[in-house]
Length: 368
Image (cartoon, rainbow, N blue to C red):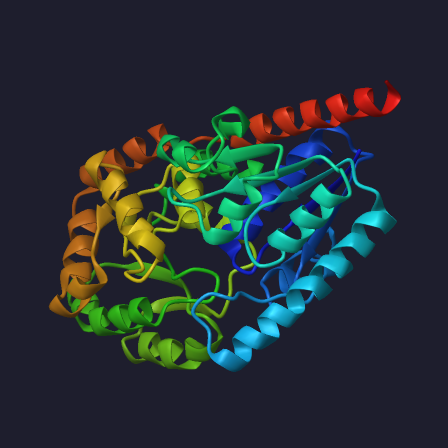
């Protein structure tokens, strides 16, 4: 079996694609999976490290850009289609799956024009413009939320959930070992590129955190620009912290965490619930259709997380939330249990099941 997974740009698009790739290889160790992405996206740093082959195309977004960038982006559309067509022709995949991000569009469109089976995955409740367009030609559409069905042709949609890597399912078992430690472990990240607002809130919180006399170890993903600044802040207050621009082994980071502070992107929430971890969610306030706030609110309503709006960070609400969790072990454990109940570790299985059906149907048509 030969599979192309197209997309990336951010971890929110790439990691579901990796989860799907893992499931294909789990079923057939002779399967070949190739990713199509861009040189600027996170995939250029991670895909080869995870053992997959990456092919790149030249494409950028068109929405919300200046005139010069818009002209360049429009010029790149036919070029990226041609590049995608060349990759597909050389690799001859049985299916092309778009997981979101700039490279997803031209790859899935090229595959459609070449009469290859195609599918797309939409992580968010409200799809972006690329997936709305691709939904017209893709043969299967996998969505995370029931309410997303209304944006696509009903006969194509499967409510699969957002796929997470299989290793996250094993994270729950590590929580037992964590209880033997004499310190609490805090994991902080703001997406694959970090988040300035979260970094600043953590720095502002450190004087109060020190005064609690609580023994805390921190792993903090800052993004490339603020590593040294955040590192100096932890050193100033003698808090043991590992400050990184990017965390490659996210599974291990989740495994060690007693509490997570992060944004409320769909993929992060899928991983948090699959791992059964308690979290303080700080939604990105400028996300399309404010979907991160809706994601976080849904988690909080179910008792599976605490939401702190970015506008509330300056008022010290983040420290109140952290201290409220760390000072009440029963509450911390209760939030973790409710988080675990929402976890869906079978999403990748369902997606690959449906993709395999598409492949088999296409083979029958070719042989018929």
